[in-house]
Length: 485
Ligand SMILES: CC(=O)N[C@H]1[C@@H](OP(=O)(O)OP(=O)(O)OC[C@H]2O[C@@H](n3ccc(=O)[nH]c3=O)[C@H](O)[C@@H]2O)O[C@H](CO)[C@@H](O)[C@@H]1O[C@H](C)C(=O)N[C@@H](C)C(=O)N[C@H](CCC(=O)O)C(=O)O
Image (cartoon, rainbow, N blue to C red; front, top):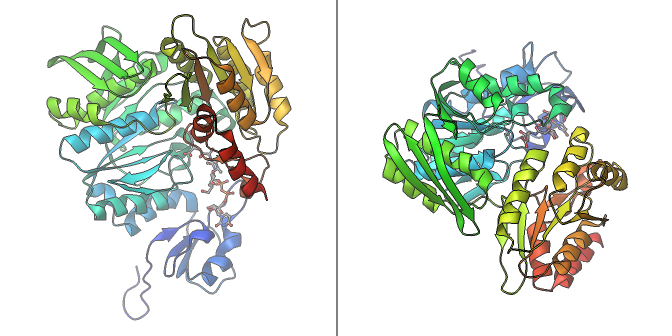
């Protein structure tokens, strides 16, 4: 560190030239689609005070050369944000499905226990009533550290962070110390990034190392969870339905009003009630219980916290309209999650009611999942195959791959590539007592059909379904036309 008259003061670390603030240190990250070193001049023009680089660049700013800028983002980000994890109790939640819901539940539990808590998830960063958008599920390290500092300054005493495997792999969580790490379960996903299932699992398992987390909560209902609990070098609370679980689910009931879970732990038997809809939430609720107790929240506060939680948007969001079918909007985008979402939809339908599924798959991502999604869709009665944001791929070709999983299915399968038409048609075709399940995008509001994110348009599945239920699709159409013109 330099001292004296030539000392250099930098305020904050930024790794995107478009987000540079005057006086910051700009980190030049070499990436897959561009190289941050190319944006050093733009960062300087926007007021950056210095550069973090892997090789010197011809820009008249002080430059700190390191072997790997990406590897330095976590530690340097923590340093410049004043190491927020030293002052906050932080919980990290990882797993293929259920991260956002479980993070939201744990936040509710900590709040109820008297610990004002911030939460960083796919649906944004929230503290109290304040919500900040985040581009990624787990933000880049500088943004994550700055977000935690913001929460701390606003009065947070703890935070829950959704930890994606990609983020763990890319070091976005480096520089943070977690009091509790939670594993919600595992299913094939993100293989475009990880290459193999083993690499995907190992990225998540990294969270359960002693240098990252003090203790763990692991859902052990499938072999990957059991393997993690067996191998972890930190103390782990096992959660699940099997007899060996430390927090054992004895029974559960899920209907349109919510989910109740009866569980047993070392302290006795507890009944938990939440307004989350769907059996897939049972282990999420049990994991949130275990995390709360591990964090020292008294049992009655955990019960109260879970009961008060408002479910995150697009996670089995149920739209009820008298005299109309139920519509459920969910984020399910893996075969396992779709299977559970369909099971929930079946349970919500009246006896003899039909389940209509609106299904697509995102373009240019995890293509290997498509046939499996089609196979899971066989449990529906009516399937409306549609576009889910083709990102430059041919939407008809994506749908054809989904269809392979549906070959010979008893369900009636239609292709309606326009997503707006597909949702509206499914809602119109359904009768009272039926359920229309719209999956894949959940809370997302941008639909992208070219390779350029700037071409994305506003599209909210819940909004479209609500308008269809009110028989007012024109209102949404007008909005779409206004956007297009
Ligand atoms: C695989 C992955 O995560 N890639 C992320 C990574 O890309 P990259 O390292 O290749 O970077 P790049 O886009 O080549 O850019 C290099 C550098 O130049 C900078 N840049 C770029 C353009 C510019 O004008 N100015 C500028 O400074 C970038 O900010 C970056 O620092 O860094 C970029 C900048 O932060 C991210 O946008 C990009 O996320 C891509 C878009 C992405 O889609 N990521 C997904 C797969 C992801 O991370 N998802 C997970 C999991 C979600 C889940 O579990 O559901 C998540 O945590 O969100």
